[in-house]
Length: 259
Image (cartoon, rainbow, N blue to C red; front, side, top):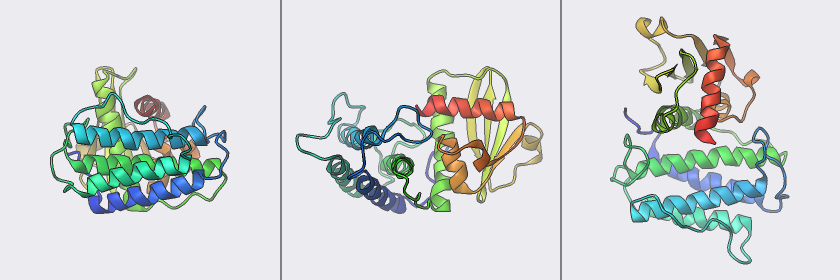
């Protein structure tokens, strides 16, 4: 499977920096105990600590070539959550900017062993958590461009669902195939009692052979589908047709993949 992004990787690096700045500024001055909607138990403070920690984990992985055992997981003495996020972002962006995104780099996905993987992964991690803190603080949710959302849909389906759950040995309780459509792209998500898979469909049209085994379909504006798949929007935010049990099984497995 080709794990490369559907969006220009230079833009994804810019998105990472911009979204992290918005996240940090939103967190600054907000009450840490504010709850993140649709994420039981997660707060604004925990989200900021998580994202700052993830930036440092990724940087350590990139520099050492392997999954790190130790990195800074909390703000330092007298360091605000805002500064913890900002300094982590700057170091990571500076490191990624020094390398061509096509250059080989250790990652946790064999389909994309390049620096581009980290640009993409960290950008989408940041977009989703930026939405989280804005929602928790009752601020207007900033727009997610369609091409960013479409790439994010591709990432959550192919990397998190198709790859991560397979590595973990997760299977379904029943067989079912769900088509996902957003913008000009489409994907097929297959769940069986023997394994899982998700793949892009060329263009938006699903051919007759695949159409015959589709049990359900999810469609909607790219931003809504993106946030729905990440568990950040309710069912009514997208159109769900066909076998709802097949969709619910896929959605529940995504929660397992991304927890």
